[in-house]
Image (tube, rainbow, N blue to C red; front, top):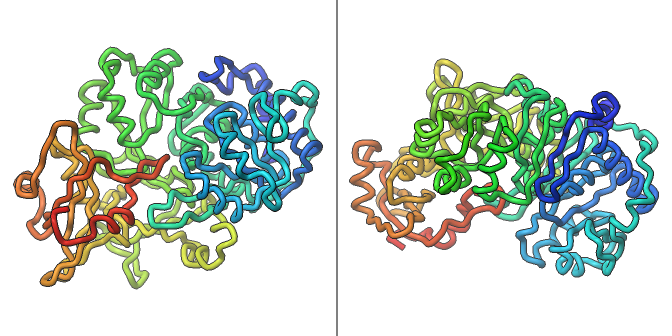
Length: 507
């Protein structure tokens, strides 16, 4: 089987090689042991729950080894995992359950209360707890010993068959279920292995939540494809991450900018040996110049900026280009930049980023109109604006929908945000457009400050005076305790800011 059985193949070919180090439970799994675990759970899903190809199975849990096993077991059967965002309110889960229609829900003890609220919902016939608690249905530990480690019967799986449904972060409103197929996930893994030269000696820390594409597709599955090693933690904790990088001799690492800032701020950072790291990747949001400089000067580490999205996989560029760019396209990724009429833009000019390749999703679950709007003539329209230099290095400019048109001039918030974040008082910023009677629209900076710091609009624009044209400088400033961000990726939810701060004043 080309699809759905990566672990089984390595379990047969390299059974003694370490695949997963579970830092939560203090257990290590070889590829042979992982294959046996996957077979046990696949047999339980097939025989005990009646899961067949095409069925959806939801999961509401913190990171744990059983979560990975569940995904791999469902993949083996041609069924589909639907990870649920555990940070949502109880009422929000109902949307995902109604949209995805899962046959079963797996959950951990920490989320039993939420799972109890789903009992009896139409189509949801099984509730299974990862822990030894059968109060809501089945408890996996109580049946585990009776399950066969022998491979289940093979299932014919095609590259276009869905493997995973991940719901978008909802930075612009109601989430959509992105359908990731077996072929797409394999292509993303191959792209990553080839583009970043990954191999069996590489290892990473899996800290990203598994309801987020980064939890699966930045390093986790690519490393399983090339026989590498994942070190599993429940969530990101800077001191633990630093300890594991040193102790486990981690070679590659992914984080969002806020995580790198937390590592830098940790009292353990200075004394931690990070020499095992070949490279680190930042994604999810723009990386500030000060943060990049600090890692370079203090640890000799270059943070590469990546670019991707759930619909095209998180890894589309090799991230090793010039600072301020995310580099050259991955081997299996095609890129175009186009203007509003769909014509290709010249080097140095801004255009919408279009992506194409085998790493493209199949569209949005049960949303044909949204799929048709996003995928046109085989190209995925990202909605992001970028530019490319004469050497082929790509850089992000901003979101197409976020672009501010002021007096006929195009202003890109991402350009301003990068510069504002370099201010020593600023912890985070988002720039939005607000109405203006003279210019039509002007920029407003919504700023989260560092502890004990203050900032005025006059001081901010004095800081920007020699860095940014006057017409691009924010005309208003709002200081907030914290910017609203998506739980996993840390992206600022600008639609919330526009609702709360879309007025032409300093508030």
